[in-house]
Length: 335
Ligand code: ISE
Image (cartoon, rainbow, N blue to C red; front, side, top):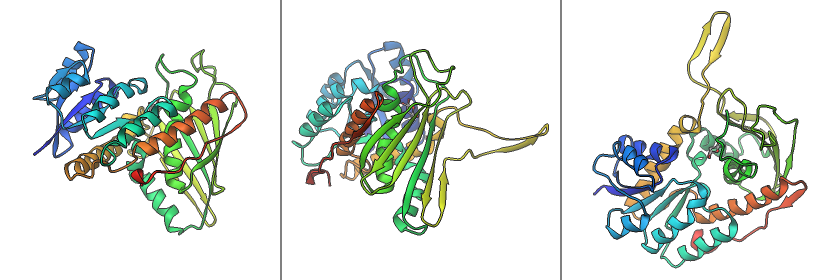
């Protein structure tokens, strides 16, 4: 029997997931759209035949309309949805971040641990990108020797008006805080932020680009250029430096065009296309895991909590200094 998914939030990400589940994911369909903005809900429902709309998650649960919940609202609205969904023992895929800070993330962990096993997967989709997976395999295999450094670029063409300085860390670098320890097999020890020359094209309220420096427990150093006003497109790439080699992922790919004295390759404009295949893979694997009772196949709420701790160090680092990420031991429940 197909999984009935309630998608909470029908903004850009929610609408993207609704289209994905409806057209590309097998074994599931969108049975409910939970969205307080009625016009937005109605527009989204047109792309999900047979779905009902609700303004609150509690109403969808009460109506028995969902078997699982996909939370795609902005981060500050995650906790009020996670709580009733956990109380109803529903499997959850929660878009990043888990919650806004480590205190509220710890509260979610506490509620979840009242259940028989983890029910929450956090939507860090980079782990489902084929190139990230290949790079991880290369690191694990030791084929190019030990990993020494990771050098990343995370570039957005522009950001919406709601995007604040702190969000450079909590909305954007949040991805590196998840994927770097996963790639390198080692937790983050310290975080530091450097300010290169400011881009005049950045919105007035932002001081960026920033350079985020991390030191991992295993001695690997990481630098990430976080740059949200690059104008030309969306780019996420990593260079991994090993003892005996260098690997690169996230290079522009696709059609190359030689014309009028130039060679060009198209560049992505948004994460929705850059990571489209990763999102498909993530959601399909989650649906399969829910249907066969594993419930989670990817980063869990503990991973989300560790990222919240790293974000807090990162936000402090925006004001200067090198900040330690408080280590926390993974409970057996989340092994
Ligand atoms: C956005 O929320 C994302 O999650 C994207 O992956 C990231 O590249 C972007 O900077 C964020 O604003």
